[in-house]
Length: 383
Image (cartoon, rainbow, N blue to C red):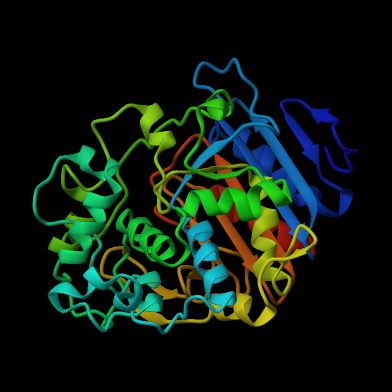
């Protein structure tokens, strides 16, 4: 299986994997042989160049469609890495500051004691707006303006700036509305026009109908994740009947732009775009950010016991930092984001490494899925 030339298949696994990275190929195959996968893809880039790109299994539950280079995978909260990059682009252009008050660009947000909240506090999950305590129809999530109005009027669930508490869905509306107020476009539109299309990257927030046939079916996890002792804050974030979008069709979910939860991508596109943060702002041969902005995006904003996730987390400007988690390799300076069920995208500026893992069989692990950790550890052991 090692030393494949491009396009040569080995059983149901195919892709690119030089001899140097044979341990990655072995780990990828083991995830399948041990029954952990339906379909998956792992991509690793060094200094922005893809060196490993492995894929295999099936894109559909009936196991009739191969999981191949064209397969688009829902990546759930890994989408937050893309949203954070789009905010970083505004900062880079001098149109927004991380330490700027949100109310300066979104005046309605100043309600209920939120006037002093900054952009970086919102991005690092310090806003206290992780979910709604008052009942609503789950379909209301499909009304962007209505959700943003609720968030603007809402009183924080804890004193802002005192702790992080992961915002699983609301993050996308907060970051997306900040972006829209500054740029004028939706975040998904800007991602497509400014990065995905010009750089030839298969990245989508808001998927057009023309791409639906490429989407992988998702097999849901066998159990709910373990959130630890339940609190009002955790219930608001994850456990109310209205804590996530519902009541609409899968097609409507795919079309909707929710920059925290419903991005679709390939592992290759994620690995290539995350090179921005591993390679001083350069991705796909283009200076996407200034080197200083790329570093600033990953700088720690807060660290400590998260009020929603049962972990001690160091947060950058929208990114999970590897410090203390160890889910993106051995280096504390790596950062990225993970998605419900197992996907992840990460960058390591110290080693010039970026990578991504996508799959369509979800596990119950919140972050640091054992399959991706096995692949990432094998990759670093090969460097």
